[in-house]
Amino acid sequence: MNERPLSALPSRTARVVAFVSVLVAGLAGGTIGYALVDVQCSGDCGMATGLGMLVGAVGFAAGMSVVAVLGLRAMGEWRERR
Image 1 (cartoon, rainbow, N blue to C red):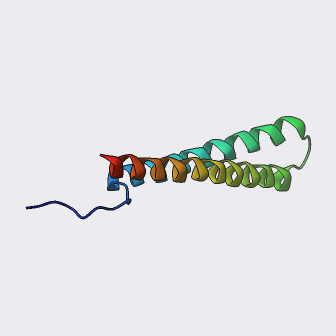
Image 2 (image 1 turned 30 degrees about the vertical axis):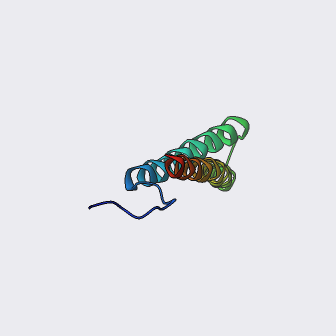
């Protein structure tokens, strides 16, 4: 009898995929934030592009983390019903 106890914890693979998706979303958000400010700014824009990159990366990563948590919770509920 090698059964795991009933748990809402998703598999390790699902958690790794969720973590990587948050990282990829942060990277995409940083790139978009940088490009958005870079296109609109002329002259010395180091601080502005850095701030755009930071805001974009944090915003996208935060949004994706909400989606990832909801997805992982749904997976846990589906496993419980089986």
